[in-house]
Amino acid sequence: MFTSRSLILFCICICLFSFIAGCGKSSSGTQNHKDREPYDGGGKVTGKIQTRVSSKQDDGTVHFVFHLKNESGKEKTFHFNTGQRFDFIIKDSQGKKIKQYSKGRIFTQALGEEKVKKGEELTYKAKIADLPKGKYTVTFWLTAQKEDLKASRTFEVE
Image 1 (spheres, rainbow, N blue to C red):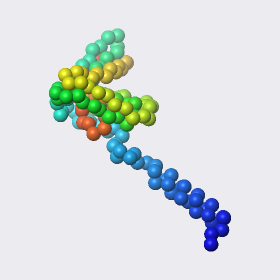
Image 2 (tube, one colour):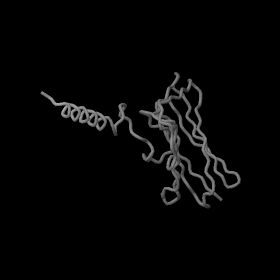
Image 3 (cartoon, rainbow, N blue to C red):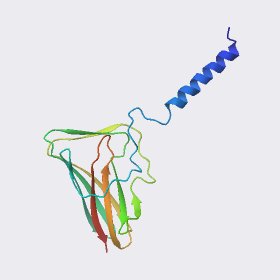
Image 4 (cartoon, rainbow, N blue to C red):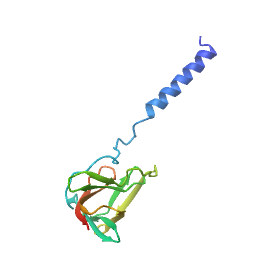
């Protein structure tokens, strides 16, 4: 029969195995979008969701708006694994990554969703200051589960 010492050791092993087996993989199987770099492309329509990026500059700051317009004819729900709703990368004219929005940021670790009624637009705003003079490309993408919505825009800092 088991001694109390063997039983305690067995329980500890089961607990450790359960902990290790549960770490490192989400139950939904979705990937983390933080370091995923989207392709370069302008605004587009994907599944009847039109995307685009607009920008304006004032006093050394570039203000961006990432637009997602629901042209599907029905309400669209986006599901998120964290509080992060979008990400963007800014590259210089040689293609070198200058900035990524999510780098160095911490987002809430809670599931969320955004609903967009038919014909309505969802927008996300961001700004960046102190870019040196030059030409850049910004690419935004939505970090929702099972979505591939992105848009790019070229701009110049003078």
